[in-house]
Image (tube, rainbow, N blue to C red; front, side):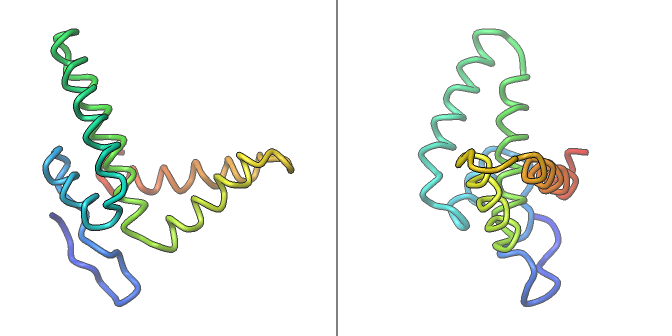
Length: 116
């Protein structure tokens, strides 16, 4: 795992290495209820990688879960993202601003995870 939290309001955990095992350990600490989804996604990615003889499914798995961890390890970012997703899913107002902010949160998470 990389850098330690820099303040009491910093991330819950350091950003893990971008490996399935490190991501699984991080998810177990910050969102244990998501372990079944991670396990299923890893199984599907591994199966698809074998069938297609391509690492692309595994790269997609790592990307997806690295972004998830990068967001969820910051409770304020995660809460804001979930609130924005509720706005979009409710369909009761113009989602344009919410979608733009969701994209910014995800782009920041990708950069934090070293994916950009």
